Image (tube, rainbow, N blue to C red; front, side):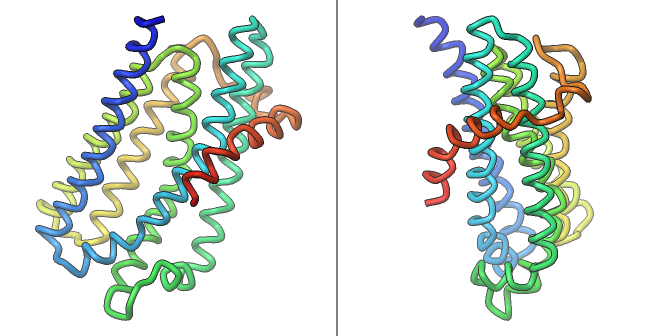
Length: 240
């Protein structure tokens, strides 16, 4: 038990540290090379980041709980359906959030608290981040399932790849190609895409015990209902 605790906790801790550093470095680049207005505008989008974490926890924590129990009971078929149901559920939710965000972009920017001076920067940053949101949510929530399947190091790699790519792309788009706030947002969105591809490689590259296929993507109503009920607690905690 002690060895298992270390096996799972150390990669998770290192991954969270990498994720925290990625947010800090992101703002260092923006503050140093773009300016205080841009830094203020990007900081206003933090509630959107927390909301994404909450939604990712809703599906990720609920799905991971089901997956652990199904695999522990030797119910591989149900475990496969849990993974597919989680993928379909988070895809539909993220598509809905992106669509609503883009349709109500000006209202969202205002709700985030942007002043007339900061609103243009906030609008540009938010619009690009919304397009990358489905990849962000898929990568974040499925990372829980990868850990539940017994691959904590691969799950840690998701966070390191996202953080590393974001630092490199920030340097490329902000310092080398001075693209301003647009470059910062583009760097973040592409880093989230890279993290998602790493997660996809786990399932489509036969790295794990389960794989995603067309039949498994048909959501099971009972599995989805239980998944959301279990994930409701971390979702509400993050939201509040």
